[in-house]
Length: 375
Image (cartoon, rainbow, N blue to C red):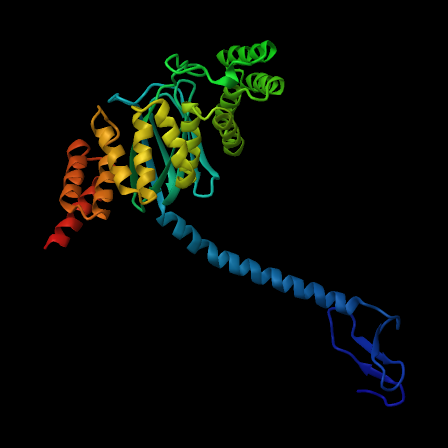
């Protein structure tokens, strides 16, 4: 109740003592005082706020506990055993090379990494898009993307290439690039120190010497290339891409640098920028099966179907174990051009070369689709 002449009104009951609202004068807001001490206090609103916060926390915990079982169940349904078999190009058995295999999710976050000398690893991963990196002292760094189906087990066989030299392959058949004719002696010394450090597996020292070589000679394309390879092996794709780009800018005939740059761009599905890098690499090494195959894929993705077919044909002309998928590229390109009978032949060719391959189901689906179209 309120007493009209500036009396008292009983307030709401909080966890502490009841609060009295004292009217200073008629028509003016009341202020809160404690019933016991009659002094202004803020205990009631604070207590109310604390109670409100506790309630919100309890609600949040309840929601979280309710959601966790369903989330766990969803994740459980999507867990897949990923089995990877890694072979050197042209070989039939898993490689004994020292490898580090890294699986990343579609955003580039590392899911799991494992070292192996058996050429076989098995991971528990979730279904969906993943990126795969394979590195090792005796191989060329390998990148690919896998879209893993929601099945109990998913198997992939991967072909990798041996590293061609400890550093850069010497291409005596081609003229020496102009940027390599002016390398100062001190910069060369730093580069050679990097070579020696790599033989001792001292990656940190090798990087320091390569950076010093670049500081002494800013146009040192070889040093940029080697530094980028060390960066990609260490998982720093951004720095590696920048250094590969610098190397090919200094020397656009640097085939190996163009190919390594293309690998990064392809992993990002940046086919438009990968195309010139792949074509430049082919100018230096026209018979490289990896470059021909991924050039065919890139041309398919860009809608250049005739070019894709031409690259796939060049692969088929050679011994191309491990590259049967070029026939799927050719088949899809031929379908897009309306050359359905030829497309059928490419699907059949894939199945004859790799009947149990990871793309066998896709080839059979292609044949079924063509049969349905011709009825």
